[in-house]
Length: 457
Image (cartoon, rainbow, N blue to C red; front, side):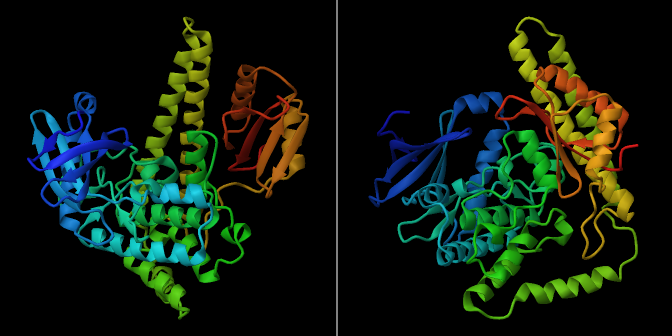
């Protein structure tokens, strides 16, 4: 793209200031007002590969134009020049929240509350207009010169009044910030944004993600199964009401999550002013209402269908792994492909096992009020040791975590052999759930993390 080109007869393209999968962002100049602007250019190769992305690009401009909020980047113009598409936006020159966190690590409590309050107001405006962002992350929060945040990049937002452009099972967004229901491929509402907002809050306070794993498959399992690391263990100056708020925003079941951005904003305001918690009153009322409801939850059928879909996806990835193992042209690459595919298979199988546990334990599509489902059965270290010995498997170490997650470290052997042992374990105990696809520790010994839905026989 040549510098100096005019868009819509008035916006002059300058230097590149950002580049992503969908398009390139240039700093530009409004030749009439002499004010800087940002010009987003949709890459032609992206259009060629996915023609429907043009509609998504137009939709971003439409969403921003309708929002018109001081904490949301303003759209100034949309333009089609020959076969090229452009979106002219307000220029926000202070960098992104992601850049701010990289430089500062943990932000001060005052700064976190200030940014969060304004973001909650921006989200409340979007949700009021039935717009779900679906890709909330620090990189999509820009910082203005006065330090205030601006929410941007509504390119994959779902406008409730428009038909959906993506299939229900398409995972969009950035994995670390996606909600469990987004990973499940279920339709997302405002509560998916609340989850992502909770992840951002956690990261601003601690400098770490609440779920941080080495592979995409492990990260998916963590988001759908594991609890977050206690925030108060990472930062001692966070007030208890803020800890509770973030925990409620990161509830895996959207039915138990904070229901609206307005409620999040009201609680943040109460925390800032040191007044009585708004969330505690709402939670008490919701719990009383839910406790009196003894009918089957309407999501049961959806959860059961989702469980079947997850099992199907697990089998699909397993088949892909076996197919890769049979190819011989590039054995090293194909072996790595097989490991990855099998890891994805086990991640989906693990998610399916959790859903089965919820359905069997509660008889409902969600946990009972005030309780979390017991996903894994409590098993002693001796039971697991006896189980492995019975199968003739020698381990150099066996660790137990919280009474249900185990790590078995094996003497040095090829990863392919380790994979075979995982298959043998699965055949011996149908209730076993693998939490990774087999790794090597720092001394080169392979290990497996696993748990059981029911104690091994």
